[in-house]
Length: 251
Image 1 (cartoon, helix red, strand yellow):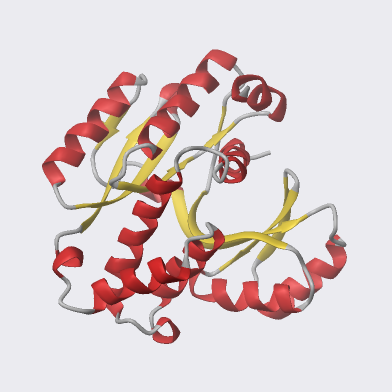
Image 2: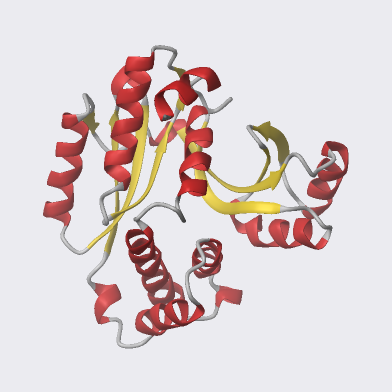
């Protein structure tokens, strides 16, 4: 059981109920603006924009908001030009590796805030490249496990060009190359499978097992603290928390 994947899934399901919808839309809007500016407004020829649109739709972002963000990015681009895509790497409690993706209009402000968040939760920033090698970028499609036959899904995923299918909590996790995410998702949905989420993410090559509740709680507070920052688009970590520990600290 990958603790980070499970925790991300829990947070994803809670997202609509939490009072953070506006913050989520802010992050999605930035991603749409920058993707449209960098690669143009046509998702058919812009993989980053295609993925950003699907992520926004999955979050129930209104169509008008999506279209306005794309227009801003592909127009004069004043808003998009002010955003800088950077990353931070560090370590959390228990030696957990943490990789942070950022879109910011003020590098100094964001660097100070990220450093403060790490320090406040018993972590520390590291040099560029310190932990990036522990992750690999992949497309991930989650399919509801209760209503799915694993053998049928595995065959359909292979036909669609996916690399692997594995159980992940209440879902099957279908992994593929980032550029194949859209086609794999479309193929699985066309075959009748219940896709619950799909995104390009950073999967850990190795994991750090956390069995102490006190350490697990600190790790999750660090992840939450980073994700609450509007400048931070995504946070990836390589912790693996047993399900019983995760459920104990998640209440």
